[in-house]
Every structure is written in structure tokens, then in C-alpha cells.
Image (tube, rainbow, N blue to C red; front, side):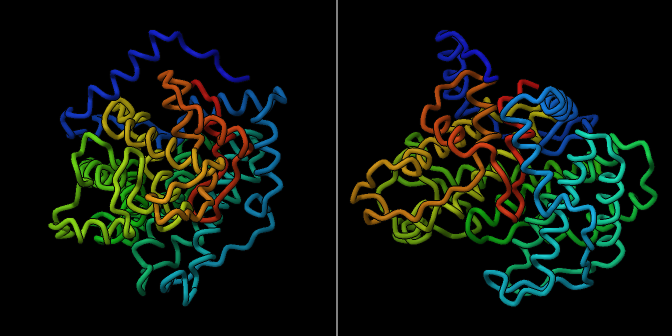
Length: 393
């Protein structure tokens, strides 16, 4: 059921669009009128997925069955909200960290299940989970608080957008949920934390998704500006010059500081990310957040795929996919050793760049097919073969 590849001329034109936009203005202001549902997945994409599942078409039917069989779709799930979620490094201590992330993923899973099946039990379960947390949570604390807030704060708006704008059964506490996002989550993520790139990108994804749900144009613009800067500092392109771009507030003003920040990597090549030499798992978090923001922006009417964001996403996916597929690691790259495990993070970017724009992405396509149906990373990524796999909407 994959789409027919575009003509070579269209491919060339699309590639030129991406490359030619590397010097385009960075400003992308909030839409005058927000599109809903509009965080990562649109109504048209949901309609396409639903139609394919109902027809028993693959890979969507298999992806849906996988989702429905997961613990996140359990209608007997009991929410576990906490007033204070305390998360240390690598979630140690873990006071509510896993519970919060998984309840948010469950709310999103139930929202998707509702949309595909029209079984109101799933909509009501999603609402129950969101209501439970909005009634209780007050703060996130300890060293991982910014990242934890970013992960959960990326997922909650996806669920809320689907329920608020597609479920006709009513959501009495949607205002309280909005207040939770505005008062508990947004202040923690909107200003960043000057940490590793995947932190910053996940936090920015949360800020943008929350801004869409709240229809907060000021926060959307602020988060989008930070996103553009952070993406440029996360994925290297040869056009950046001898050294990667940096974020001024981090004071990476010497080559030695930059190399240290890039996990000791001193040779910079197109597609390398700031965390490639740390491990592919964390790199996958950063790449996924970039793709999610680009997709949300596209739904809101401003196409980042045709800017340097799209080119960095394309190159990052291709570079990591090549080694994830087994290419021998050269000695100059991370000392000749890579820690693989990119995760289910390729569907959104691959669909947008290859299927829509016709850009050749052989390695990313091979990896995407190999990983289908893409499941969840149990943090903030979930069910993207279902929602974005070969989705023309």
C-alpha cells in the first residue's frame, strides 16, 4: 500500500527546495487560527489510518492490533497521579515518573483507539486518565524534572487534542486539564535547560504541543524560535562550516568545548548528531522530537520540512539508519564503536520527506520497513506506523 514514487524531476526539485532553503529566514510565527486536532497528528491523518484499519490493510491493521494489545490500551487501567513527581537522573529516584509517562501514553493510546473504533469506552478512559492527573499534580522536582516534564508534556496534548475535538460525549474537566498544562508543564519547558540536545528538543516539543492546545500564540512563537536554534545545534551539516552550530547561552566558544559537548567526536560529517557518540537511543529521542515538531508545524500551516530543519532531519535519519542497518563503523567515528538502538522514530520524518516530497532516503526506508509496525519507546513515542506510515494526508 506504499505510495508510487514521484518522478525523478520532482525528486530533484524537492531536494533543491530543501537545500535552497538552508539560508531561509528562521521566523515561523504561530497560525492566526490553530488547526485541531493539530499536535503531531491531524484529523485527515486519523481518517486515513481509520479507513485503512477498517479495510484490514497493512501495515496499519497490524499496527492497530499491536496497539490495542498493549498495556496502554487496557480499559481496566487505574491512573496513578501524584501531586509531586520526583525524578532523579535516569529516573532514580522514581516517584511517579514511570506512572506519569505511562498514563499519558495510555491516554493517547485510548484516544487513538476511540477514533479508529468509535468505541466510547476508550474516549472515557482517556478522559479518566487526564482528569485524574489534572486534579492532583502540582510540580516536577529533582534533576530530571525538565526532561520528565518534556516527555509527559509532549504526550498529554496529543491525547487531549483528539478527545476535545473529535469526541462528542463531552469532557467536563477540559478546562482544568488546560490549566494543568499552563501552570504545571509549560513553565518548566518553555525556557529550556541548557542540557543535552535531546532534553532541549523534547522540552520544546512539549511547549509547542501545549501551546497548540492552549491556543497560546506567544508561547508557540517562543518555543518555535528555540526549536530552530536547537535543531541547528543538534544535527551537523557540512554547510555549517568547520564546527557545528552552537547555542550562545551554553558558552561553547572553543573547539575543545564543542568536541566535549559532542561526546568527544572531533570529526564532523553531515548527519552526525550531538549525541551520536553517546548512544543511538538518546539520539533517537532528539530526532523524534524534531520530526514531531516539524509535523505539528506542517499541520498548523507552516512547512518546516522545506527548510534547514527538514534537511537536518533527513540527514540525521539517513546517517543513523546506515549504521543501525549494519554498516561497519569507521575508526574516526566515536572511536570505532557505536551503541545502537535508535528506536521506533523514523516513520514521521520518512513519510514527510520521502513519501510527500519524493526525497530519496534508501537507508531510512529500509530501516522503517524493518521496524514495522513501530510501537512505543515507553517515554513519548507511540504507534507511528498507525498514524504516519505511508500516510498521504
